[in-house]
Length: 242
Image 1: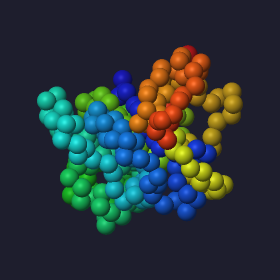
Image 2 (image 1 turned 90 degrees about the vertical axis):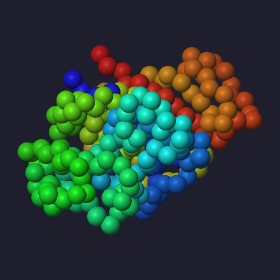
Image 3 (image 1 turned 180 degrees about the horizontal axis):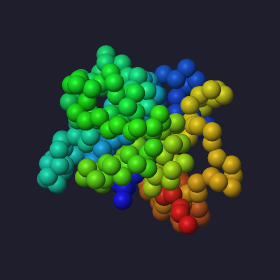
Image 4 (image 1 turned 45 degrees about the horizontal axis):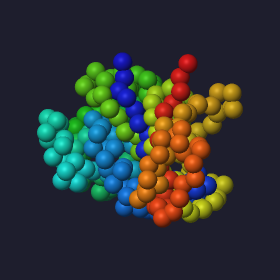
């Protein structure tokens, strides 16, 4: 058994997570950030890759009073566990991430854990004996620890690793109205990629213009989305399985 896993990302209209220089992407709207926070608030834990942490130096915590009250009413902690994923354990202690009032765990290898053992930055170290991370084993361990819903915030290497092991169940992708370009600019799925025959297949569940009207996918394919509406397109998919 493993937790239900949801990927939540914002990208440019040409499918880039940020510019080629790899700086933190800050082009999505307040409406998209509110959607992201709502998804995080539903999770027991958040998975975040080392590259994403390196770009932002921080993670998204739940701050909306209504969402905090909802978690309290459900008997949950104010914040989901933030799980940094890094095989090398090469994370900078100066990042604001380590000063945020959130529970922090580290998923790493035995070698990557050496600099963090006996330190206060992480409440729990999830160790793997191999020299790389096996996410199937990791998610089974998270389920045994009581985590039932995970949200993945990127980056592309983490997403690719999860897709290779068939560990992502649904996706929320926000398409933002700008073009970033750049052959080296990060995309939602990095790694070696997939051949067309092996590529994960998706089913579109809904389409929404943020700030506008929501339509189920069956309507979205046959009707024209009319203005005035928002400028960002929110796509909700599930991963198809045999």
